[in-house]
Image 1 (cartoon, rainbow, N blue to C red):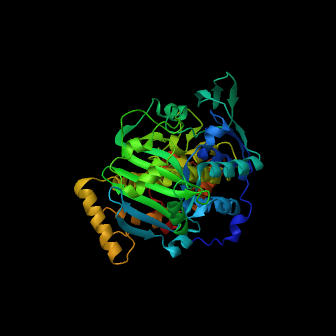
Image 2 (spheres, rainbow, N blue to C red):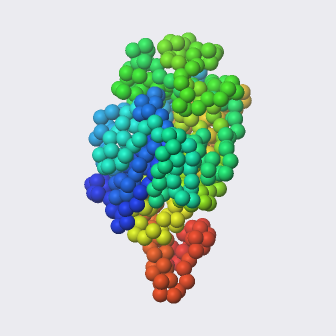
Image 3 (cartoon, rainbow, N blue to C red):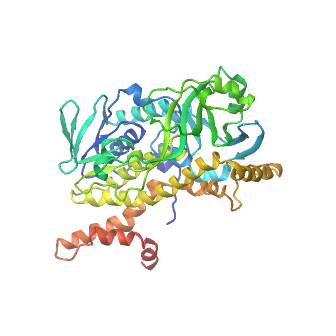
Length: 473
């Protein structure tokens, strides 16, 4: 389906629902806030429950906003405020972790980025949090802190807080992460994932501590990546170049660790065999939060069998920590959910919209998540795999090529960026409505006059044949 969206048409107020309902969002991280903002934009009511206080929820560290994420926030009218806080990244710089040898660089294709209608931004997690919070609050979303959910009743769509207070809404949204109660309720059991053997140590290095690095990264608008044997570093400037967001991938020590834990690890003890060039940066790093990289199975359902509870973000699809797309997928989830619910005109649509959400998001997220796992292993490869990767990158750098350009080898993973960045999740949701939602509405109208209604089952099997049916129309 061709899309003709001019930039200006995007700032128009979105379609408003003719049936405003209430959403209770469990979890007030980026996923929960973005979802609340998206729902309020189309006229629904959102209350967000966050178990910690605001300061803990804002969190430390950096976050990267790829074009598929920034474009959504631009659509929502946040371009100016984001660009006042974020730095734009145009390239990746690659180095060998042990020797400090340069492997080459990858400059994002300007035309490709333009085509995506987004930008590749880097900022602090806390700044992104505040932008979403302010925008959601302005539109009337409510956020309650220190509101820990103790029990979830999907059938009655209500929750019980640790304080004993009961709250209910028309729809519950689980945005409380891979270890939160929502995922457990939908799955029917706890799922802690399988260790992958890697952990990420997430921290900041003050730019003052390494002025020449900070300047170089800022001048080059770069993200810096160092590859080592079973170790890797990803670093990029935030808040101008006041701080460098710093993530070290290293073998997992087997202790439990997750976001929300306090900083506990001295990076120098983990960053062994590191080049002298990076030693200063490492010694200036604050204590890091240790996050175990675990692989979680794909959930068959993101919607509870018992009723109106739907999972989004890490609760639905945990990503490896620190990846480019983890945050983006969580925000895309909220954007799609709200887009579908902007068409709500009758209570009986609620269930079909929740399943449509799942249908639209599952394959997209599965593909992107596989790519992020592949790139974590690509960065921390050992032995012959690492040697092959480095040689291929050096070869390309020597001929002046972008080092991540695929040649059918492992870096082919990175070639898919055009597809990943170019995706417009809100357009996809609109297309679903045009192709399926309206069809169902007409069928339901006919049913009230005695015809048969397509069931959800027909709908999901038909989703597999979308292309065929539209061609035939």
